[in-house]
Length: 242
Image: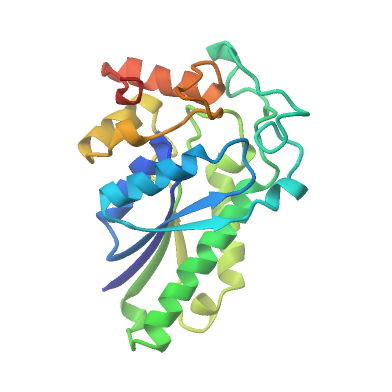
């Protein structure tokens, strides 16, 4: 069986855990990181360090132009839209916050699938690999339980999007290899994800989840609050704060 995978790696707890998970399941894995015009590029360096520690091939794509079209977000336009901070737990996950980047996961998934299809098509058409003995999987780290209310983190979004991608792909229509999407942590709590990361030996001290790019995590943005809750409920200290 020839197995190809692309795992989206942002440098945070969730995507690092999923990348470590994917590493155990495919023989040709690439971790893919996007510089998309977010408020800081610090997480890109963290992603590179994580991929190196995990021994996974890594590619960074500069799509900073995304901020020109997906401008209505605190992550791409913080000067105009202040970053929410200090929100109570019971407010996180209700309504779509200003940190939502318009159609970000739609674009990310399409680019990841394009890289994956290229790798798999090369295997079939240039290396002579049997398409009937091949799988192609995009691994992503959305979470529908401990998440910030983003509509493109829901299971139904990914189910619909991958159908569209397969309808437009050569590998599916000509070679019969359907591109799959796996979202292994989508129904996990943050505490469950922390436990999974520990089991998979994820270098948690090298992960960065904060929406801001300071010397230390701010502790007040939604991402920091959710991460802190996860470590607290798992009963372990966050090594990134050491």
